[in-house]
Amino acid sequence: GRIGARVLVRSCMRKAGFAAMDTVWLGTDFDGAFAQYVKVPEGEVFPIACDWTDAELATLPCAYGTAENMIQRAGIRPGQRVLIPGASGGVGSALIQLLKRRDAEVVAISTGAKRDALRHLGAARVLDRADDPIATLGAESMDVVIDNVGGAAFGGMLKLLRRGGRYVSSGAIAGPVVALDLRDMYLKDIALIGCTAWDAPVFPDLVSYVERGEIRPLLAATYPLDQIAAAQAAFQEKRHIGKIVLIPPPRH
Image (cartoon, rainbow, N blue to C red; front, side, top):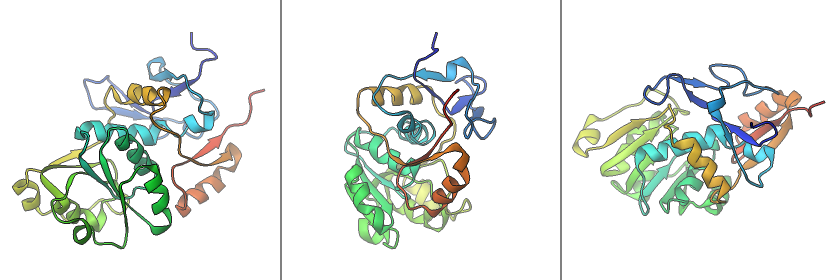
């Protein structure tokens, strides 16, 4: 059995197996994300052998799984140029590492104070949010845009894509309702790829990257579970890079 083993729980579960898209999310569809204990199906528990701390391992399941799923869906290959708006968040910073291990060229967008940290993570270039991406990078300069920001900048993201490019999203931080010029989409043969349900290889692949030392944890801070309100307040300030982790009290 797995009693005493170190394990990770896959936070995006397929309700009816991988033949269907129906999902059940830990913390969204059932309690457990902010809990000391959780009960999940045995098939959603993955043993992991590494030297990461428990808090470091806790940074993985949601952000890295979401990032890896988008990368796999987009079919990103070595040498391709990938733009990441909102690169300093949990998903964005995971994307930089996961794209770097694939030898893709990463262009990130973030605030000035975080730019050096994102370059250290592996971004080849970091734009400030105040920059005009089209003026800075040029139209049709990107193979893929992985965008969880949305909002008013959406239209420009499509103009940045080359012909046959892919636009991938699993979120809409700056606003879900966007202006889409269909000519940008169809004249350039762009694929719009929506991502929520994780595909079968995603989580086992992540575990293998950790076990082989190909990615590293991005632990911004830890808080005791009973200080969850302070942790949420720190999260809302958005001064961090990576993930904030809650530590449950020790077992008696």
